[in-house]
Image (cartoon, rainbow, N blue to C red; front, top):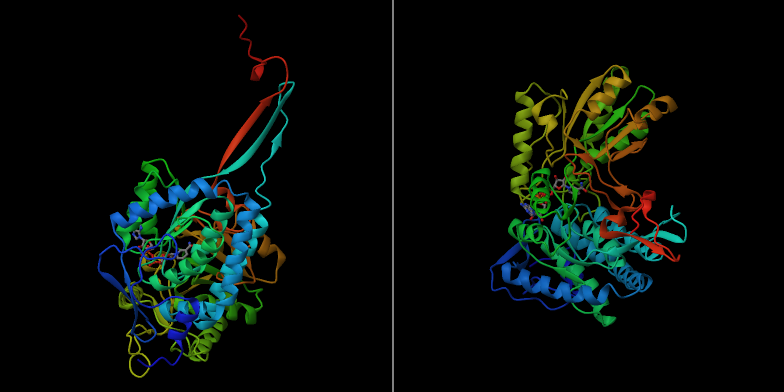
Length: 514
Ligand code: NAD
């Protein structure tokens, strides 16, 4: 097999062999006897590896080991847990180029974005190390004399992590790095569309836990499709399920976890808009919209899907964007001259083509037409042209998240109208306003402004930093991961009241004397 981008060597450097791979609680693979899932690259359509799917028995073995591991891991002081996470971050630094390349090849995002994804993992490890000394609770003044009240945070137990294909490694690390310093153990069900990148991570982290003599099961991976995800969401031994993916999936997981009164942290689909006002710096606005709409071939949850443009600058924005789109180079994501890589698979291509038909049928006008690319370099059948349509916000297709590079242009007159359009979709993940006008920016950020979890000024909708809490409202699921105080989702809060007096006064002054 020709290997112009050196993928085999990268796999070797990460320390995995591209055969006999499967689910694991540490470094050894558990043989489930099930058939293998082939990991295909959308870049060239070639099979990278065969990865064995887990089943209900593998799942049981993994959960049993995770329960044992939790008994030990929760007693390790949090700063020491942080030291282990620090080493995982350092190990990721060493393999950044190789893991970035694997992510790019298996998922189809550009090599630069693959590197960026690994950098996010390193950043969240650093964040978690600091956090391991800051899992603060509050103290409160008791209303009763001789009493003290405070709260503390304890580990939850097993955290189930279900992840999507488009961030095949970073989303795991956002959850796992925090969960580990919080004293939890993790069972990860990665996307069946990018299993090899997950096994690479398992190997990197598993080696560090083993080096420190920690039991297997603190870090586990179970390969499989939605049925394995269902095992996690239905299992009362898993107090928290953090699930990233489509709104359709999130509704099912939320229901299953809710029925057993477990906790879910849902990070679901977006339908993100940028408002470009007549006071925008159009150089920044066009660049922000371009990267937001075509980066990762439109396969980010934060991809810019709608551009809501003030009528006085509408024509200029439209023609400048069309001109920028004409310069986009589409091709193999590992070749750094290309701006746009492939969609994940041919089902995604079908969804993209169907959306184009729908927007045209609903009355959308072509600004830059789409279509499937074929010929040299496009043999995988997953390369499509980024497209732009003039549309109305109420079109059914505009209300829906199509996970592909299709951008809808919508015209507005007044800012309140633009904000209502921005909020007028079922999803609530990311939003942005491009303006140099302070009043417009503040109105957009006010309580009557954007209803999204993320609201930016003069920055596109994608490309969040790990320091902030990440997530969205409405059908995006309400979860928050990563920075700020997102760690609280991975712990249970306990309120403690201590009586050091010689009597037993009751709260609210209640008398109960015999
Ligand atoms: P998907 O919903 O098809 O799959 C995501 C994961 O859920 C996979 O691991 C899949 O096996 C699992 N799954 C599917 N059905 C399940 C069920 N019934 N029970 C348990 N698990 C189940 O999503 P995808 O195509 O991999 O990813 C794209 C979607 O993810 C987009 O909607 C995107 O917006 C969203 N996403 C959201 C965020 C966020 O942070 N908000 C981040 C990345 C991706």
